[in-house]
Image (cartoon, rainbow, N blue to C red):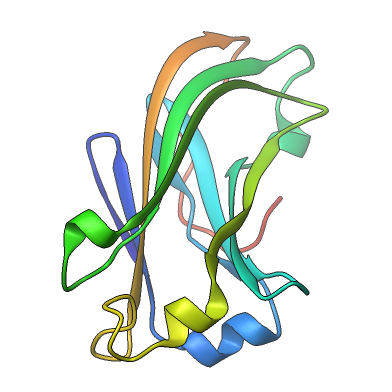
Amino acid sequence: MGNEIDNKFTMVIKDLCSLQSKVIESDKFVIGGCKWRLAVCSTDAGHLTLLLAVADFRTLPRGWSIHAKYRLTVVNQLSERLSQVKETQLWFYQTIPVTDFTEMIPLSKLHDKDGGFFVNEQVKIVAEVDVLEVIGNLDVSVESREPGFK
């Protein structure tokens, strides 16, 4: 479902219809010594939502925080300059371990077969994360490929 290269993680969604009914989660991935997870879902307003989360946030020791700059991209596979990109920089905490872009792209634009986002029955999402600072111990030595937000 995804792969990692340096500070990038690419998630390929093959069953686009499933966006209408549920959240699709990536495997865990490690960037900057931290475990992350990407989730994709649709809103009632008809937009694609992307969520970046600290994986295993419930089991991390008290007091952890991660300062990260990140960019989430819905890739236009026909013309990269038409890709939908949102980026920001913020702190992730135990009480706020997830962030989202609720209006990443309208589902109608995503489903347009000639629009370049849905090619060969696949949609590509890229998360680029630069970890700027980590406070606390975030042990990433444990296996980082298990399903479900923990």
